[in-house]
Length: 204
Image (cartoon, rainbow, N blue to C red; front, side, top):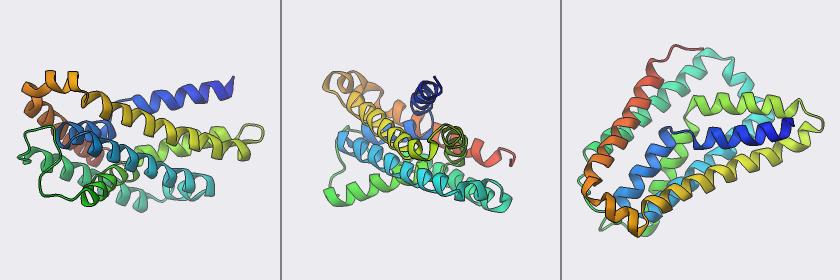
């Protein structure tokens, strides 16, 4: 029963709207399906970092070091605000990849955006510390933990890839064309909002 609860909790956490969702949506509607998928891949790769330090116990040390936690928090907040401002001043108006940018460069750009957006989020760090403390308390927890970590990583990849595919589907993208600028601005403002809230939130 505990395993089932943890599996369900993982799904709920992944699909809850947040900065990752706003970033994938923004990149997808502005620069096309591939950019959204590479952003999703970057997010899922960042999950391996959270899994790694959680299993090694480094996360526990970070969460109990006030200055290090604050450094990560402010870095994450500033990065989200940067992404939001960049989105607001973007002149892109079509759901197609930017002209003049090589595919390799685009891949690296969106992978990096997804990776940094997730890995610099202290809320994600605390979630993994909390969830893995529960997993490790189970019988054979040390064996289950890596498998559960892989499960969470795949959930992120599947969910955010689905978001990219859905919002760039021919039917939905056509319906959203007239609202493209509004959606872009809404996503950008959401990223700025998440960043501001993260920066203003009192330390733990």
